[in-house]
Length: 229
Image (cartoon, rainbow, N blue to C red):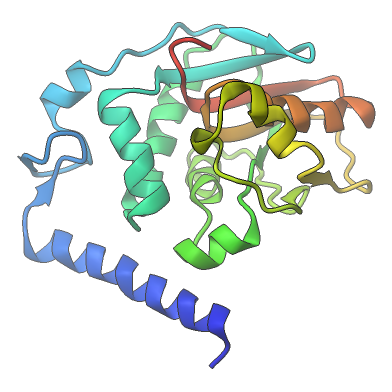
């Protein structure tokens, strides 16, 4: 059997196992581990999550960046469960948090927008069995009715995970790691979707590609941001 196919099969089994455990046993909060009836975070963990204001928290290459939460506590656990532990159900709830957030943003017309997820490299896809940001994008697209363009932006170079290196090395790490489809054209608002922004290095590289190709109407949207960003 092809090694990558074998890994996909194993990951599919792991995902199915997580879903079966949720059916057999009571679901656990991804933040504190207590038993819950629904969702992925208990009421106490949700109380500890700080919802950010409904306006751009920073600017990268002239484009506004909106984030829903700080990357800490329960939200950090949610991202990790989705990214590293086959807890795909977290994608739905992450998308729901984002959807409820953007409904409160009054100065952006999300009815005339398209979603472009910051996808992972194919090596990570084979390792996990899915793309965590793409999964969030699929769910958000269903909720918001925004079209999802998942082949416009691709990661062409495998990079060291950003959290493993210093802030000053992160931009160099992701340099030339993404490719934008030259045939992509739209007059709609582009929403670049990612799970977490910490130093902004990845979004800096990505938005530079859009800027070089003449796209002016663009917003970056992330589930979480580092507190010091």
